[in-house]
Length: 433
Image (tube, rainbow, N blue to C red; front, side):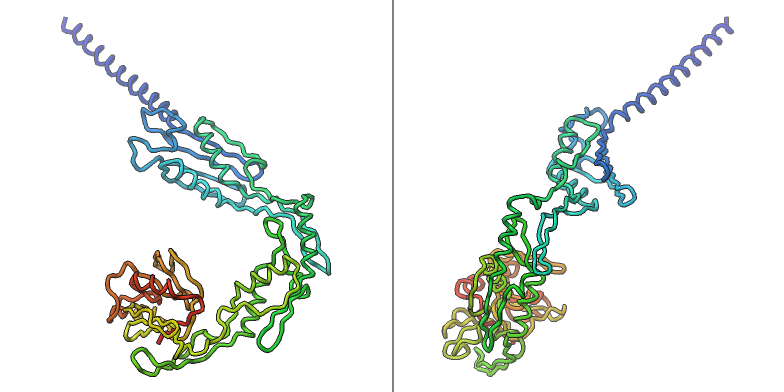
């Protein structure tokens, strides 16, 4: 009887152990199967170009639904993790993992990642002027991806839970807009030939400069819309050379300051100054229209007007030592104000000299090493240095600039900047001493 009971007990233990082991194996098998089911993988193939793959996992218990793969997971506030791999055989390999929260971020991220693939941009057909004639150059197809088209296709593939996306060159690659056979290109050639008859005579102070086909023929190009244009580097270099040769810079000026002191201000760039950009635009316009014209050059500053420093006083005066600004126009004081200039302690002291306002802009973004600032009124006068409001400051003047100055600009109270902006014009002299 005892032996029978013992045997029965052993049989039960063995059965339980077997059942547990079987259950473990079964759970392990199910877990493995479940793990396989939670992975979504999309292979992206571009024949002869690259191979890429997008991989993500769905949390346990969730269904794989395309619309959910590129949006927030309810259990994951960080976003969905994607693994991305791309390779160009023998040239390029890239492997990364990142989080995606929504479709907008998905498109932006993948556009950036696919842009990393080495490519050649497509180019329109054009003509080069060589040996007194225009030589045709056929369009270059290139292999630059249309990332907007590609990211849309990726989203559609994911929504359909596709396993593969094959990319063809017609749909997914940018193409040149014009070939030599296109009528628009042929019209461009006619316009190029016509432009050779243009002749511009610039009347400088002591001599004339003639700009004709001998000067600009090999600068001629067709822009993206098949309009006549000039090679930017060659044409800008030419106009800058004119400025170097014909500009007349006044080395110093002497004024009676607003405090009644005699101040001699050396350095700066006032005088007879060519406006390089404006002059270049005029030359391009004359070439496009095949004009024969004789005119004065475009000046940013045409010398000093009579009485500008005395009876017809018109300038902005800035005393760095006093941290004060005075703006005079036609002999009338428009505004006087405390300012904050560049911080000498950090090597940003505002340069002294006689300058002039180059242009004016509202709602400008000023950026430099380690800073970015939005200003409502911007009036540059010395490269990246200018007059502007500084709404992040609540104090101006005194010795603030010594330890907490600007990066070189003249920081102004908002009301001061607005008043100056409403009365000043490009070309107005700015004196820093």
